[in-house]
Image 1 (tube, rainbow, N blue to C red):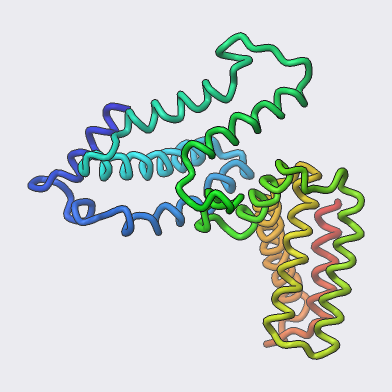
Image 2: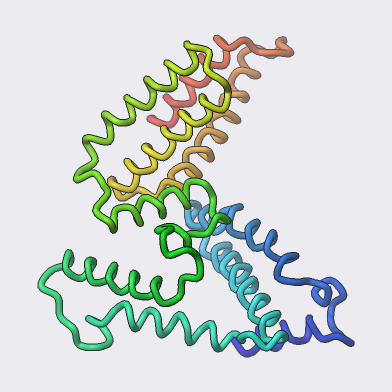
Length: 263
């Protein structure tokens, strides 16, 4: 760790450092952080079981943290050790059953205490309006990630479904509202609102089924892309003289791909 911190200091050295690293700021490197996270290369490496690639991707993420800590240290705000101390203290505080000898009668009791501790932390650190229950949930998350966190927060106030089954009915209800909005010729913003409502209900269903909505959507899009590419291979082989394929031809190829996967 000290080796990496030293490298970061050298990159930022005003006289002998790298010109690109020298001119960076919190604002300028933030898009790169989002890129590292949102490109989900870590998830892709996990999906492929490529541990060497995963090691490299985790290093890229770690470097982002080191970069922020260096910038903050130069401004006299905090340094990397402060970051480490902060997360260490938080984990120790949130696990009194591991580090402070506290006992719980059940897993449910332990989870309830976890939420109490988190609520105490938020009340001590939140700078936004106390009337906003979601003020500390950053807008920089992806829509699915933020939706899931918002829903979790609402559940802490007992505003939640008791099981996943009633949410299925809500999904159908939201689909019907989309159909109604489209058929009645409502403005585009209203259709967008209805589609958004469907997204958040499906995200809530995912949460109740212990499925990470962001990860599920990522895997599904990757599966679609893989199937699509294979489908195009099939239809090109079957209809070599076609410059453009009909939907019926591609649908036929799509079914063949699904059959291949089952075999």
